[in-house]
Amino acid sequence: SSTSKDNDESRDYDEATQKALEEIDACQNEIDALNEKASDEILQVEQKYNKQRKPYFEKRNAIIKKIPNFWVTAFVNHPQISMVLEEEEEDCLHYLTKLEVEEFDDIKSGYRINFHFDKNPYFENSIITKEFHLGTSGDPASQSTPIQWKEGNDLTKSSKEKMLDKGKKRQLEKRSFFTWFTNHADPSADDIAEVIKDDMWPNPLQYYLVPDIDMEENGVDGD
Amino acid sequence: SSTSKDNDESRDYDEATQKALEEIDACQNEIDALNEKASDEILQVEQKYNKQRKPYFEKRNAIIKKIPNFWVTAFVNHPQISMVLEEEEEDCLHYLTKLEVEEFDDIKSGYRINFHFDKNPYFENSIITKEFHLGTSGDPASQSTPIQWKEGNDLTKSSKEKMLDKGKKRQLEKRSFFTWFTNHADPSADDIAEVIKDDMWPNPLQYYLVPDIDMEENGVDGD
Ligand SMILES: [Ca+2]
Ligand SMILES: [Ca+2]
Ligand SMILES: [Mg+2]
Ligand SMILES: [Mg+2]
Image (cartoon, rainbow over all chains, first blue to last red; front, side, top):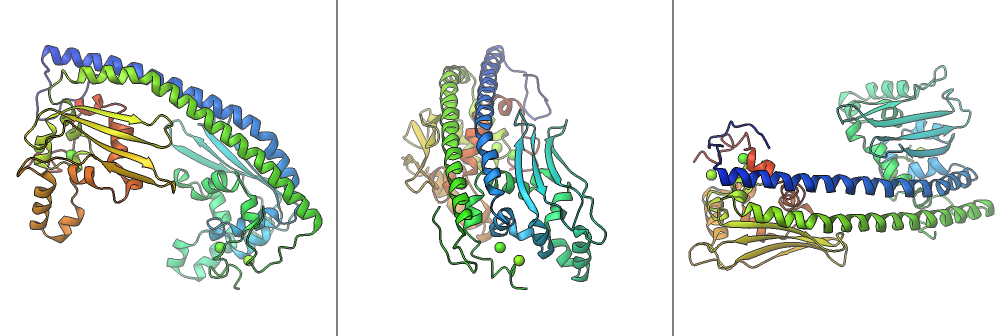
């Protein structure tokens, strides 16, 4: 309970107050210990159910593979994910056969999103991964698989060039799927990753089935 | 898995797709059931530890009573709570002898904050409570004890009058402790209640001991 003393009132407490403060501190330590035990138990529950859910997610992925264009349809119908999908990227995502979100075993420390692709005209990789983990500072950091673009088909380049054509303002506003995937500037505010992890992955069926009502208005299919 | 069909593509799936969609739906139901079981178990853990923490919070409150002006000092030193404290309200809070945050037994449905006051020149009540509970719609609603102000000492009135004097812009920005207490316009965005519940209540000692470094700059003590 030691602390800085740079305020304008005296911190030389009288004896009774000093004793009371120490008793509060002791009490606080007991509360902190219980908080930590509670966190540990909650983590154990989450781990147990992650394990129990896993075979259902795997079964779901096996079934999803039987439905042509399941993921690209779900992505296009998702109000936030669709916002970052450029036309050519949407074409590329027709080759996306499997999505996986894996929380690390200790949950707290991070997760990864795996995108499995069929052989496609855009890149050589069959799996590309964006991964989030807590750095030593406690802040999240992200990294992603370097994409081996095929000659002339680098979708981050073509989207950058397009953006330059449209002027600076547009360039600042516009995001795309692959610039999201390769961007690690602000991992604690990666809204697309969070939406994939916390909204798409828990229930993609609803997005496959229900199209975004704003789709036409947003111009996604208008060109 | 039935849904609206007002999009521009056919939703008459072929037989294999229809079967796969039903299988995904069945899988999803299993996942949903596990999610619910996980939530229930986590709730039980939280309830267990709330119960275990309770005697320490009560003991802490008993010790705090021995320290003059503990709560008003902690409030004044808290960066966000101090922002809503007017000079006269700070005087009033010298009579605050006990703070309690009580989560409802099922936790999810709400909580209340009890403020216990010594006999004071401002109001008749000895306990005033602000309470949050989920309405039938699932949105939070709040209510609070009607304060029985003593003649000429209604701090919400005097603060309103002061604000009128200072013009409209100031009026919109300025908040005060008792206008917070009596305001139920947007309970889902009640930042002061959340700060009391999630930051002050878990560890008030740190705010009693460490003054807000910005205190002078914020002008709280400058007039
Ligand atoms: Ca859209
Ligand atoms: Ca301050
Ligand atoms: Mg399109
Ligand atoms: Mg003051």
